Length: 432
RNA sequence: GGAGGGGUCGCCUAGUGGCCUAUGGCGCACGCUUGGAAAGCGUGUUGGGAGCAAUCCCUCGAGGGUUCGAAUCCCUCUCCCUCCGCCA
View: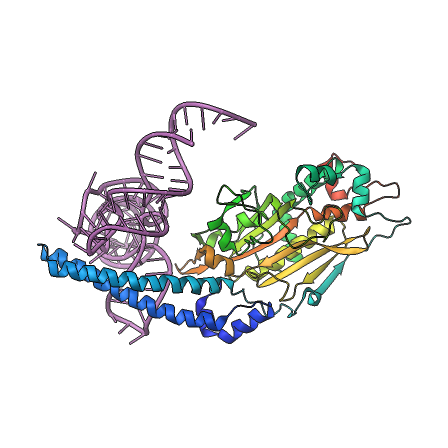
């Protein structure tokens, strides 16, 4: 959620930034409701003061004073009426306020569609084969790694049984991510190589809850009941669409010490997405599934270091891809393509040698204080002052890099070589 | 799932309708004291909101209700603890 004071002070700027995100939020209506709300709030507070004073007078009188008691009854009726208006106005006010998107940072490219995302870097040599390379599902089916037909019997479309070497590879990727992010020396060198000045504090591994309550999910700004998030019918619980969705809210209603920041987590969760509205898209292979595996980074920081944490997380993503020797490109997402809570967003696309195209494998999101405001996650400065923390999240590895490895590391006889850095996690095998 | 007990200002705690604009201790901050410290003494120490300000409003797990008045009484929900049942 954005700061209402910011909207009051800079309505035109907020409108402009919302328009850049293709958001159709009515700022003028919001400000009108805001004025009404303040008016009603002052009235209600005044009535409450009179109620309190009247009750105090009755107490002081000692003996029951029917005149004052009747006055109190009148005040109560008056209060209920005004409070009713306040509650309904506040609800409308909050409904709109929650819809106001975060303002894109000035360095985010302005664009109307994802076509205006900016490729800022390409890394690695795309593999050249002396045979016709296969795509990942051709290889996966041939190897018996992917069984979607039986999964469809059991669970429906967009589910798969992943089997054999592919599963070993998935766990190796997860292990590699956890080991890398927990290694302070590695983080230090990434910081130095990227001219960053932030802490080299390691990421703490987490296995977070995969089910999240509405009152914790909703304030993250990531609950999308229509298109993304599965709801349990008998409980007030949603299936995690990303580990980040139960990491970013763990300090909800808490005040962190400035000295303890940054707090960095790397969490693994099976992730679930409804993928409503994506019918027919990415139906082949395991690119867009209802259930997938993902390792996610989450960082709570001071406002001063939030932007650098964002760059740091992209740098970590690049480091991980480089260690795997997977060709990739880095994309500055334009205003239309970053999410509502985002101030900035960066994607990494891996090259798929078998399909001759790029595939989004990583995202890095910087929310400034937008998430923290509704989650009420604050920090106490050393001088005692309070402010909102800044949050960042970013993919470490999802399931999609498996696709890139399969396609880029394939051999003429249909094997897949194992990237060197993953061999220690796979019994030092050469191929799967 | 069943039975019971709890959730109070960073931590512990008092508090069964108005002496609660919440007690005491610990911790923390500042001051006095001291050659310096400790001890002792004193003051302060939950968040949020309205207002130029004085000041006011809200906040005792959450939300409703009763009452002139609720931490306190009633209802619903939630979390923690103990026991029983079931179970990886």
